Image 1: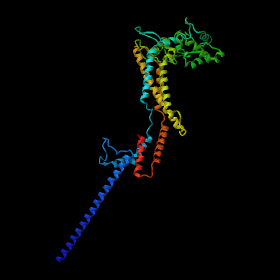
Image 2 (image 1 turned 120 degrees about the horizontal axis):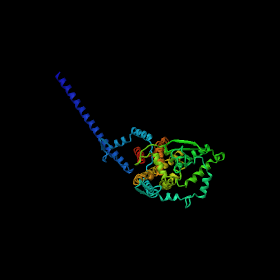
Image 3 (image 1 turned 60 degrees about the vertical axis):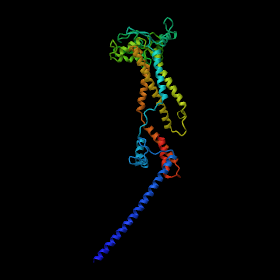
Image 4 (image 1 turned 90 degrees about the horizontal axis):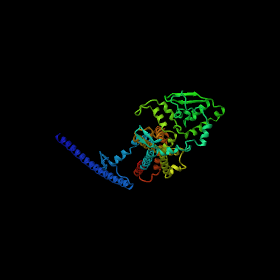
Length: 450
């Protein structure tokens, strides 16, 4: 019995030894397989590296500029896959599709140089050429010189004795209008020097409305020095004059331009409505200051002089913009394959760039005008209203530009992006290794994004 138990024990031990030997043999085979697999992986890695070098690509680098063969526990191939993960790419594509276009096109260094030159030249012209409407002793202590160009404009239309040119005198005699009253007690502040400021028919712009209405109604529409709208009956000019009212209004305005007081700047009479503010040593309102400015030569003739400053900006910037278009074939000659939307977007971008440059230049010149007022001890006659009007105009254009509907631009941009990617896909050589195709595609896509 004991011999039988011993034999069974020996058989089991022998079987265990055989199992251990088989396990060792399997382990050796697995180790050999792992070694061969590692060699294959290393060989493949070297082949991929050679492909990358051949195609001009480099291995992904860490943020510190280190080779990412082993970075944060990930091999370089893992990093490459993660950077081009289809799930991540889907998220990136959605972000790109929904990304808003640029509000305004960027400017080059030369563009900014032109902006600065235009604004600087305009400021110098404003200070040295535009100056003030006339020589004045401001606040009875500062002698300030007026514009020689405005002084020359005041000599036009009159002779050496101050009499109007015969044609202008004829216009004054023939073109009688019911709103041309130099004195009327019902309009406070109206006199020989102020009646053209207060009566709206004498406005060179809005007078086309109020002047014609006054001629038809035989009335005088005015804003007195207290800011009250007044309409009073004067006389009925008759049917003939009513039919010829536009010519009467124009002839009367022309005859008044060359008189000693001239006619006001367009819209200047409406400043009498601004009965508030406390400026200067005499605590004057805006209405009082505007009246004082008109009485001291701030009329249409000086407005023409002031317009020289913003005109210089318009000439320099618009001239530069046109010349820059000559170097861009896309801007001047559109391809036959371009859609109407592509053409319009190209024109819009060009227009936005132009008005961005104009806005910056006029802002520069407006700052120069503020400096001019400062060096003239705050004299309001140094205000270049023409320059500030142009800045306001360009500010409105910039506001419209940044609040525009950008859906069409997004659609066109995304469509062009799809076309570019499709062309990249079609350019892949399908006879080459799949891994090379993969690298080719992402290489071309990344280079276009850069």
